[in-house]
Image 1: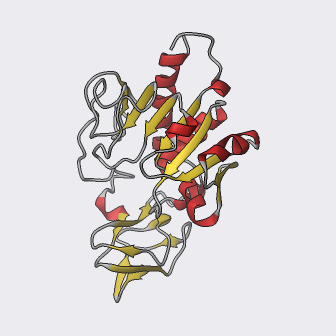
Image 2: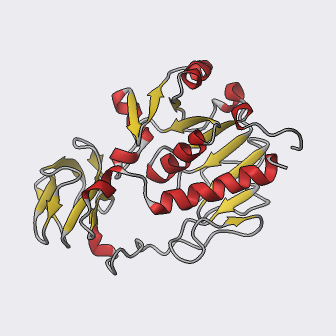
Image 3: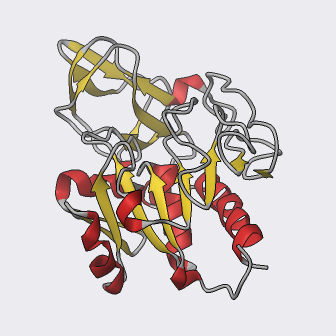
Length: 270
């Protein structure tokens, strides 16, 4: 991978378009890389206001001044790059890599397991979070667990295992997450950015209400009208109560993006 380094000469295919994946895409885009996002047909991002995957539904999505545009054919990616935007494809298996020929593939699905990414998918493969072994499934793994090692780039071994608990915000963990009380259609009564108090009804699934277990600001909600299974995460409350945090990329996403950028510079920047 040695040779003159120019970010504009390197395409990066990111599997996943949720808030953490979008933080990676946003940072790499600003560094000059040609970023493309491969998403599933029906994304269920909670932090929709900072997720490029919303382009799958709306045709385009803007996150902190950067626009992503839905395309149907990977051959159209170059035209979107020329416009200074990020192309988004419905491409669950990242099959578009045969056309885009990325220099870097980032698995940002965050499924806590490998859903099919191989170290041979691109000259450089970087995976986020648990479920991957650096040197076997990917060249690098980036730690996604909150704490001292968040964003650290691993050249061997795996990220910390999934704890099953959301990271604490002002000491609050599970109570800041909204989950579906039943299987059915999600409908929201409130919007991202609204302030809530403990006990407020945020929405419903079928005939069952979804209430806030803590006060704060609604940082994320999945799109209304989506069919959900029981127990799935459908929303997030930020107890800090700062509305602008709902519409900007999180410190966690930017830390993870920094780890990905380090991996690319280690491989290509020498």
